[in-house]
Length: 339
Image 1 (cartoon, rainbow, N blue to C red):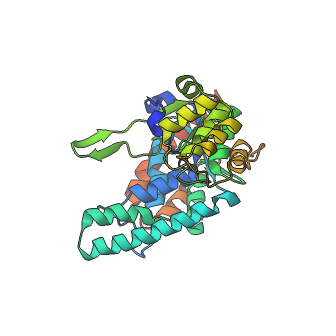
Image 2: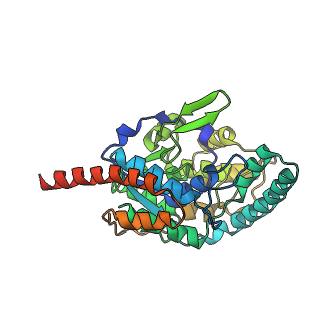
Image 3: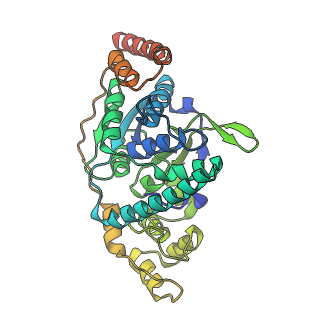
C-alpha cells in the first residue's frame, strides 16, 4: 500500500546472520517490482535477453535469493490475489502516473538525457501474468515456498508472522504493521551495496518491531490504522491533504478512538475527508486472507533452474557457480536431517 509513515518510525539495523535459521515471508509483488525497478542500465533500460524479453526480475530472484539461502534464511514468497475494490482508484492513478512518466521519458530520450531516462524509466515498470508465472517457476525450482494469497500479499504475510508461522514479514512498505505483523524486515532483497554521491555504501537489513512502534509513538493498533488512513494508503492515496505523519499522529493521540479521530478531522475547516474511512478501516482490520495456507518447501531442482535461466541467455558459468553453493547448503541440510 505504500503507507507514508517512515519518518516517524524507528528502524534497527541488523546483519544477515541475525536472521540465520529464521523463516521470512516476503511480499512477492513488492520484491519483484523492486528488482524490475533497480536492476537496470544507467539509461533506465532493464536487463533483456537477445529476443528483447525483460529478465531483471529473474536476475534479482535468482542471485539475491541465493544469497539469502546461503545466509541460512528460509524464504516464503507470498503473491497477491484479487485486489480489493477499494483499490480501483489507486490503479487508475498509477496508470495516469505511468502515462505522464512515459511522456517525460520520451522527452529525456530525445534530448539524450541519460539521467532523466533512468529516472522516468523506473515509473514505467509493470508486472504482468508472464513475469508472475516465470517468477513462481524459478522460486519453486530454487526450493523456495510459495503462497498464493486470496487478497493482498502483505496482509497474508503479516498473518503468518502474527501467528508465529514465520519470524517476520518482509516488505519495503510499512503496511504490514497495520496488518499486525509483529516484525517487519526491510532491505532484505536489496543489493548489498548501493551507489551514493560519495561512492558505494553497504546496505544492511532493518527490522521494525510493532511493540516498539506502539511504545515510541504511544499508540495502539486501532490508532496505528487510523494514522495510516490519515497519511494515506492504497485505498485512499494521499490521505487527508495537509496532514502529514507528525500532524496525523498528534490528531490520533489527542482524540484516541477512531470515531473521535475522524469526527475531529471532519469538523476542522482546514481539512477535508473525501473517502469513506469506516470502509477502509474495515478492509485493513479484516483483510481477505487464507487462515490455513499450505506451505511446502520444494526440493532444489538444479536442472530446472538452468533450463529457465539459460532460456533467457543467462551465463551458464555464473549459474553453475551459484548452484555449487546451493548444493553445499543442500548437503548440510541432508546431514542435519540424518543426524
